[in-house]
Length: 212
Ligand code: SF4
Image 1 (cartoon, rainbow, N blue to C red):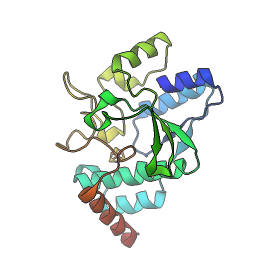
Image 2: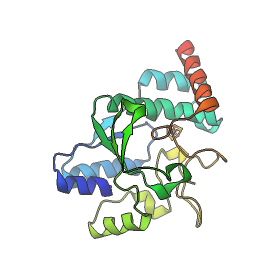
Image 3: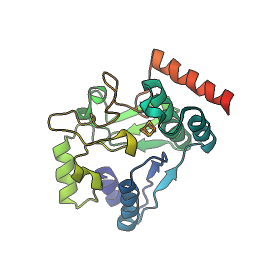
Image 4: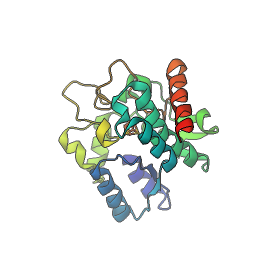
């Protein structure tokens, strides 16, 4: 939201998109509506391929993500990673809110990168060196609309069934897929699963094609 606010001030015609996984909390839709009202920006919404979602749910049930890490990654792959890739294939550059202090995986994020995973387009991470306090200060100073779940202790907000508030002293992303331990708290959008994990997701995807 801080980036959106800055971008809207610099360039009123800025484009914003989000992925509607089909499992977002109600408060996220409220925030999208507030953005559209407050900034006059029509948020472009990207959806997953309904046939893949149907095949996954038919084979694994609606809450596949609780069954195992590979099945959770399968859900993220279908509901987030593939729709994002489809959207980015139409763009030359994108801007994200990745920050180095958010997690170990994000510690080496650079402000300007070539996004090799998405056709070598430009990826800008202008808040890479910002702390959570700096973001908070900016948002307060500029009265940036705030996701309602922050007031309930959430520090990182994704899909409803996969996000919980964090406790004092926990990592900012500890509330994401909280039932998983010793696993990267990533969905695959910014950091792709490697090696064995990637193979397991590919096998699950192939099973869906057989089932569909
Ligand atoms: S965060 Fe959860 S519900 Fe959302 S796409 Fe990933 S596994 Fe599925």
